[in-house]
Length: 97
Image (cartoon, rainbow, N blue to C red; front, side, top):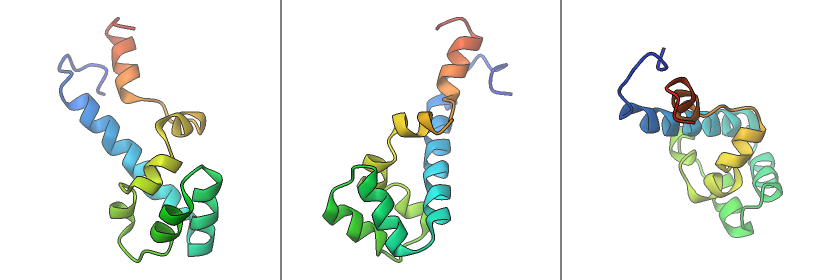
């Protein structure tokens, strides 16, 4: 759908939104605070940030944008999990890559 578009402006914003949504889905999937802290620590987040974020009662969408989730679930990690970048696909479709 977005490959047809010649307008590049919404692509980076859409790409960021999708990454945040995927982080939120992982956060929701981990369910228990203990699991969240353990997974964040395994992904390389600092101990304090992992505990503070893992025990937080804020909404999933809000926590998907915290420093702890972004340093743990990096863009490279998301790519290794199978997420394709909309930006990269758009660039390929328009012959820029």
